[in-house]
Image (tube, rainbow, N blue to C red; front, side):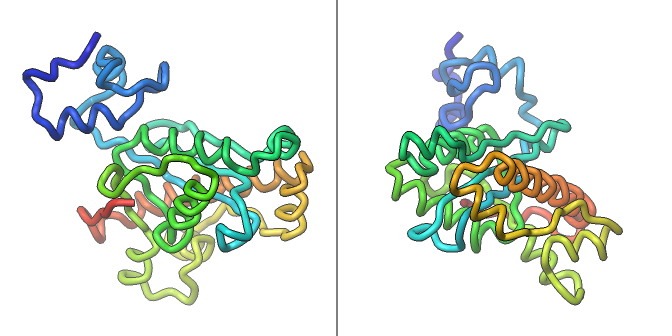
Length: 223
């Protein structure tokens, strides 16, 4: 079923075109039945996003994994660099594509210092690997780091410390640099460690978001 565009506002049409259905991965404009089944227009779909990379700059490093915690369920979606990607010599192109596809299924993405690292890194890697990146205004972004920095006087603003001090616990695993180096070589044990770390990050992020967001509402920007 196609969307009834003749009776819709331009903004509504654009929103349906950029969002994709969970069932088939098509835009809601062409899969309007999926929109009616999957979406409640009164509920803002929020995803909690973090990526892991082999370095801090996109021209010398690449993405190793990404994770998105669904704010409406207990699901955590991930993808990661594999030995086959290494064999195919495509670097992180495949997981960049899957990452962007997943992000575009949400109304708003929450990160922790994502405006300083995750999105600039992802955007640069997308252009380097010839993957289309969402244009300005296509996806809302809330960077929780700046709420923590402005509203809470704590010794360290790292995600782990913010969770320990403000909500009483953190599930983050330690960063062992050897795993990040070995993951780039396709080592399965190292990749599993990196992905596990990535998942714990977004789970911590979601908990911190709901514990602190009441102190600063309604401030989101484009990615």
